[in-house]
Image (tube, rainbow, N blue to C red):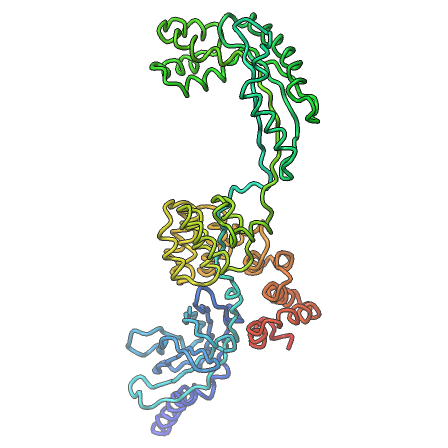
Length: 546
C-alpha cells in the first residue's frame, strides 16, 4: 500500500512539472496578455519609445524555467531588435528578473532607433522558454503582436530655416530743399538791394526753375524763416527777428516774381542758437570746443551770451566770422524727388549701373525675382561699394538657393557678426543636422527668425511644447505642425497654409478629429506633391481612412 502511495505522488509531481514545461509555456502563451503605451508607436527625435506591460497568469511560469523575450520591430525592408530581456522562475538561481508562478505583471521600457520604412511596422515580442538546468530543452513561443506604427508626423517639420535679407535704405521719394538767403546789418531789418542780386539768391532762383522743369521733382511748399544773431539780448532779438520776417516776406515776392510759386509760410525764430552752434562747429576757431561745452551746459540765452563774452579773444573772432552770418532770412523750397522706379532700376543695373548708389543696387537686388539675378547684383554691390549688407544678403540668397557650401563661404566674409549673421550660421548648422550648434547660434542671435528656427530644433528634439510656445502667434507650416504635435488640432488647421504641405497637416488634423470628408479634401490638394502623395499611402495617421 505504501508503495502505491509513493508511486502516485511521483506521478503527480511529474505531471506538475510537465504542465509547466517550456513546451507547455509555449502552448499556453495565448493566456499571456500584453499592452503597449502608446498603442500606436510614435517616432520622437529619431527614436521609437514604448512601455510594454506583460501579464503572466497564475501557474504559467515554470519556477525552474528561463524565458528569453526579444522585442522586435518588423517593417517594410527589415527588422530591428531590442536587447533580449530574460526572466527566470522562482527556483532558478540566477540574476534575471523573477516571475512568480502565482502570476505577475512586468513592465519594460523599449527604445529603437528609427529607420526609414518604419512608418508601416508593428512591434512584436518573440519568446524562447528554456529549462534552467538544461537550456537545450527549449520551446519557441508564438510571437505576440504588441503595437502598430509608427507615427512620423513630426518629420513634416520644415528644416530649410527662416532667413531675412538686410533691408536697403533706398527711398522711392526723397525729401529735398533748395535754399537762398539774405543777410542783414547788425540791429537792422532793412533788406539791402544788393542782397537780392547776390549769388545765393541767384542760385535759389535757378533751383526754382530746375524744379519746375524736372518731371521727377515736385514743389511741396515754401518758407521764409527770419533770425537774429544771439547777441544783444533775447527780447531785443525776438523783436528784430519778427521785423526781419516781414521785410523778408516782401523781398520774397521780388525774388520769385514770374515763377508761379505759392505764397510762403513765414516764420520768425528769434536768436539763432542752432545756427550759431553749427557755424562754430564748422569753424577753425581755436577754442570752439569750449564754446560748444558752454552751449551744452547752459540753456538760458543770457547766461550763454555772458559766458561766451567772458572768453574775450574768442568773442572777437565770433563777432567777425560767425555772428554776421546769423543776421539773416532764409528762402526755402521744399521738394519731393521721385526716385527711379523698379522698372528703371532693373534697366539701369544692366545698362548703366555707375549712376546708381549702393542703396539703389541693393533695392534692385531685392526687387529681382530670380535668385541667380539677386546673387549677381549682390556680387556687384560687394565689388562696387564693398557692401557688407550685400555680402550678408549674398549668403542668404545662396542659402535660399540651397548652396550651403557657397553660403558658408560668403557668410565668413561678412564683417558685422550680428544677430542676422548668427541666425544664418544656425541655419547652416540646422541643415547639417548639427542641432547643438544650431541651437547655440540661434540663442546668440535672439532675433525673430532665430526664435522661429529654434522652434524647429525643439520639434526635432521632441520639445513640442517649447516649439508651440514660440510659434503660437504665427502661421505657416511649422506653426501648424507645432500646434498639431501639442494636440491643438483646430489651431493646426487654422495656421496651415493652403499649399500641399499645409494641406497635408490639415489632413492629419482632420483625421484626428474623425472628419473623413475633410481628410479626403485636404489629401487631394496635398497629393499634388508626389512625395506627400507617397507618404500618405503609408502614413499611420490615415489607417482608418483607407
